Image (tube, rainbow, N blue to C red):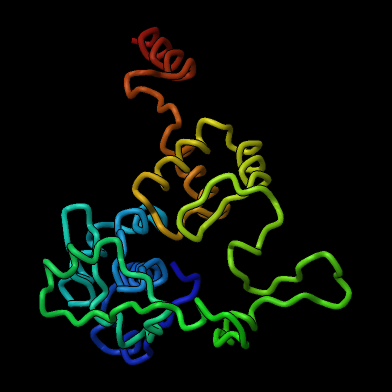
Length: 241
């Protein structure tokens, strides 16, 4: 999944959008950011990440900004094609494409094509944008100088986990383990890989989910348990009676 997405000003500056609560507007932006190339997004993990409520999702649905495709809250962003113009030879079909076609049979999807720069024996690549994002500086011989680059060349470290084009390196994994412990980190990574949650196999997202895991698994004090101060107050009240 791409790291950047476009959002149309016509949509987010419309009265229909601005009349929604700020929390629903915020959820819309995050859904767009995490959507795949067909505009499909798993809404539940996004809601969980930003602490949005199901009411926020219902408002987006009632205002026709999204269509909820199944009970797991996999959703389609209705204005996706207006906001994001994706080249056919760069597009990657959604893993929920069959579900999307089943729920919205009249929807026109962009058909993915073979990359124009693959299979050429000679000549310059037509992938000008991609090439412009990676460069080697004159002062860094033997070391890649990176702006925004592909996952294959972004790290010189050993790849620990991989989900399509997303990778988590060994050093990033060890750093996360040193902070949260191996059981929590492995649990979060296992959830990402088995769903799969595209766009989540990175240090920041794993760290956010580890923090959430720690928060949700704190041991709560039972309601019947009282402190020593409370017990002493009860004793004093009984003595005065």
